[in-house]
Length: 354
Image 1 (cartoon, helix red, strand yellow):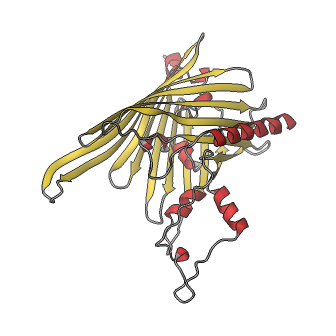
Image 2 (image 1 turned 45 degrees about the vertical axis):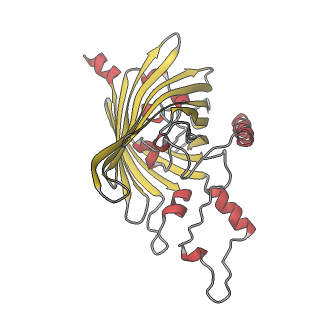
Image 3 (image 1 turned 135 degrees about the vertical axis):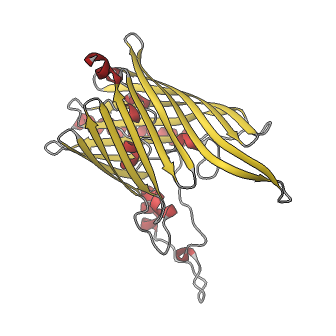
């Protein structure tokens, strides 16, 4: 246990170093935002866009390449997200192991923004157009020791928005520690480190959505329950967005004063905006029930009149022989939710049976 604690402290120290060294754009700044979207139904079910769970799940490797293992050989995964407004995205991934160099996962990540009606500045219709973005990923992972693994994703990115086109490259780098009994896992991931090769407009280069993350997970000893914690956007402390239309942020009509949080409350709010919590209960090694809570999502997207389940997600996974099916419904506002569905197939088992 002391070794695990020392390892966790080391991870946080490394994160602190990167926070001081790196600057990134979040919110409305930057481009290729789809690279940071949650694609896996399992990850979405636990509230975030990263998991540190080392159990040979290929659907986790697009966000955390240090989880790529030789046991994923010939595994195939397809994921699809139905988003309100006709925007759909997902990925297809395939893993193969090469004994001398390590395990690889090739994947194609995509987002289809749907059809738009174009118009000139005078309001005259110019016809319909489409928008879409794609990333071809090659992920590599290798087990350095029985406890430590590393991995990286290389990405070639293409984006077309009406007549504007852009090409970019990026990499993810990650490292994972897994305890000897497989109950505790910790990962450090730097995502989307790269640049545009060809910008949408000549000379106008935009930053990519870089993010530094830490993932932790702990499985209970006598109960098939695993808790997950994700620390997001560690490269930037203040993630607060103040909505001027929120009644809580408007000035008192008589005194003119605005209600402000105390120092402790402000610090707690700032800290929790980096924290995503999740849990996964496994029943008979066949059925998994998942729940997640994303504090930042809830604070930014809840309606002042009705918060509902904003920021919460719930999902389930079913494992039958060589198939693994997962579904999640994540609430983004009181009335809008995203539906995630992911199918994994172990083709290696299929080949053995044949």
